[in-house]
Length: 373
Image (tube, rainbow, N blue to C red):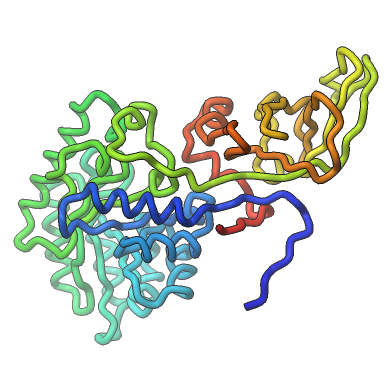
């Protein structure tokens, strides 16, 4: 196999053993025979869908979940065996491709089923479907008993369709207040009970629910997302985790230039940083085109096991860091991850950006190569 060569020192390092361990630990936590659906949408939350899918399957996941038809096709081109579920909506025109490629689709509309029935004509390739129930998330799904039963009977009336599952998604599983969550759970349980025949897979628990909620809601399978990558769904869940999570994502580069500024000299666009005294400044070849957006100005990085702040405005391809002394060109810079005894976590970036940790690895762009260990 040809090894791709990268000349730029900036890279994201993905620890596949951490991902495997997170899957293994969840499997131990679940009830026997509960399957794990590994969620690898959005390029596996920025970690790399193919490598993560392989690691998750080897660790015990039995199914993969994505958000879009194109993501599903990309996975299927490299993995011929595992079931793949598209969690989002799919156009009717994708139905025959899904049937041919053994990709399972989410449905929530009788009209969609009626239209798609005319597209899927090969009796050798059944189109497997999972009904989505909107129990309170307000995105996709059937909301009434009538919609549910019409959809159920429509699927069974179609020549080449197979009802494989039914699921819902919780809106507040990672919150301390349990009232809304429990109302969703009861809504879904009632809808499942209305089906004349239960399909192969009933699944409701997302990551937070899988980790800290009632085991009755594990049903036949759980969907494992953010914590498969070693991140907690929320600060509340973090305090209740049944096992330690192993973060899988690190972001590194190195110093490509080191210079001494005199007091009064400036750094970067707009000359927003002015050296208060004579000082050393390093240049790092990573910027907002890589996902280190300008709002991260002032964020610290790790060099020589010490925290040092980014200064000036972050550029498209580069950023600058204040150094306590001169360092050699090539000195390693850790933007996310551990260096010696110090660590900069994804959660720290999320707090700086006033967002959630899910968003951080997702915004690191494809220009940054993913290196797997």
